[in-house]
Length: 99
Image 1 (cartoon, rainbow, N blue to C red):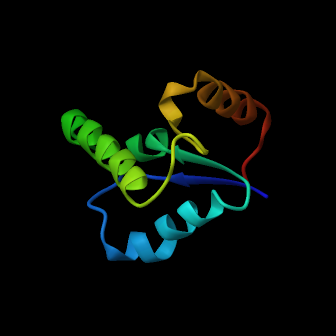
Image 2 (image 1 turned 60 degrees about the horizontal axis):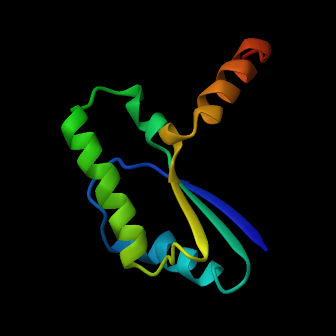
Image 3 (image 1 turned 90 degrees about the vertical axis):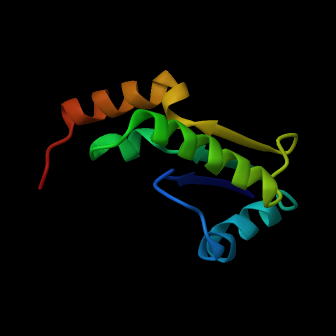
């Protein structure tokens, strides 16, 4: 099995995150490949403080590892660190109509 999940660094993580997704992410490692993306580009569509945003991104990465994701068995990355994400979005936006 292969799983891909994107998580926005939008605020403080709480018990709901652990129960709702993070616990399942760690369990997925036992069943196949896991790719977990911190979708920070999705979070910059509203007003934000750059320093706070940076800290929330790091906090989210720490939370993912603290709840059991093993960097030896799963891939965890920031969307903004992969230029192909923005490039693909631009290309798709250029040829895709709305509505």
